[in-house]
Length: 99
Image 1: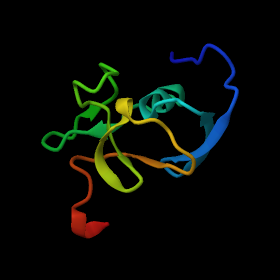
Image 2: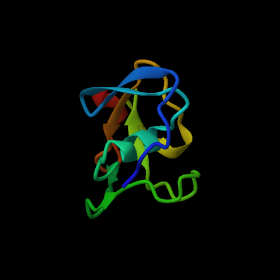
Image 3: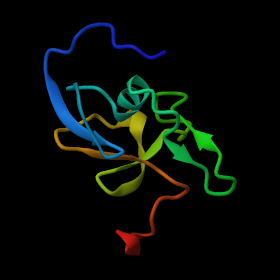
């Protein structure tokens, strides 16, 4: 469904839900999630409904993920960086005391 048009010139290593992945430098977290066929990036706090990137420009907030242990990060507005740890977010993410 989601495919990168050309081979990246430079790659970086990140972790997505515990799996090491080599990704194109300059790619957003949301683009990585879509390219890896991740079925959803977060669940809603009330019903647990699954959500995934929609607008890809930071307006809808459906792409929220845990990035480097910080919940509620907009995946579509966050560029990948070397060693980044990315996780699907459950509801609001962990409480500050849980980290």
